[in-house]
Every structure is written in structure tokens, then in C-alpha cells.
Length: 284
Image (cartoon, rainbow, N blue to C red; front, side, top):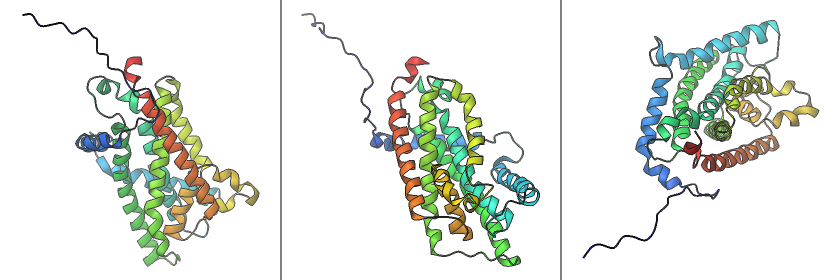
């Protein structure tokens, strides 16, 4: 007796809801996440002579340039902190933000070939980029520590650590969430408007001067500081200087506003990314 033919058709479609984020599935693919982290970290300076040393040389060269141009030529105050320490502390947080933002902003477009061949949680790719930047951040923090010890032991500079340094991991976590959230937003927008690919570098450059990296927040007139705080990177940069160097304008209301903005941008970025990545391959 012949088998009966199935009288139905099975169609597989992506979910259409906004709240379909499955973090447990991301955890099941943690081995792939580890492989992508290693790939991203190594690929940045593959076939270069100095290799990972560029993670240290880049902030040092920028610190030197800022010290000469803004410290000595322009004479911008540094809240009583030695200029190299002031700029290096600001650049540690800023570079972590800029690198993570740029590397995650083109996630979907840059990995279109991979995403079209095999299934895995798409959120793993931007997460890998963010985690690999944590490794680079570790090298830059070590460099900052060397400079800090030098100024502490061999110069008359009055810098010291206190219990507030315990908040440093929280500040770095906020920067990671902010840069990842904004990167996911831009990654989702880039799938439809490729113009954002060219705008990313310009956005980062402009944002640098809107953030107190080359100047302290104390130099912003009091009546305009609330405008500066609307930049969610203002407080993290000032907080790093406050906990490491003992200099910085950090107020509870400023920190609270920055954290709220970061939370909104991160959550909305994850939701928008999870919405777009479901149909991205079909539109490439």
C-alpha cells in the first residue's frame, strides 16, 4: 500500500515581534563567541611589524599630540593634573568607546557572507567585537598604570587612589553598554542606508570634541554643563579621571542622567538590531 502524501506545506519564517531576544541561545554558542573574539583581536593588526603594540602606541601618540597642542600651545587647563596623565586617562575611556562603536556599527554589512551561509545568533558578532576591545582596553589601562606610578613616585605631582577606584569597572561597563547600543543602532540603519558607513568616522571625530577629553568639564560654564551632560560619554570620561587621578567634575545627578541615557540607548539598540537581523540576509 503506497504511503499517503502529506497534504500540507511547512513554511519557516523569522519571528516578527520586538521582544524575541534569546540570551540562552547566545550562551549556547559561547564557543563560537570565543573564536570570533580571537579572530577580531588578531585580525586588527595581522601582518604588522608591531602587532598588538599598536594598542599602546596609538593612545601614547595621541597623548603626546594633545599635550603639545592643547596643553602647551593652547594652554588648556587640566584640573591641576600633569597633562600627559590627564589626556591619557581621558583617551583610555574614549578609545574604548570609539573602537567598540566603530567595530559594531558595520556588523551586519561586514559579515553578510557569513550570516548568509550558517545560522547562529547574530548578536554574537557585535558581542565578539566588544569583548575583543576589552582586551585592548586592558593593555591601555596597564599603560596608564605605568604612567600613574611614574608621576606618583618620581615627580612632585599629588595623585593618589582611594576607595572610589572600585567604581572603575562600573564606568567601563557603562562605556561598553553605550558603545554597543549605539553600534547596534548604526548597524541596523546601515542595512538600509549605506551612507552611514561613510558617516561613522565623521561622527566619532565630531563626538571627540564634544566630549571632555582634551578639556575638563570644569572649564564649561556652569549654566551650560547640563548640555555637556546630555552627551552620555561626558560622565564616564570625567569619572575615570576622578577615580584614577582625583580630578574631575562628577555629580550624582550628572551620573544618573548619563546612566539613564546609556540604558535607553543600549536596550533600544539591542531591540532594533534583533528586529533587523531577522530579515537582513533577504535584503542584501
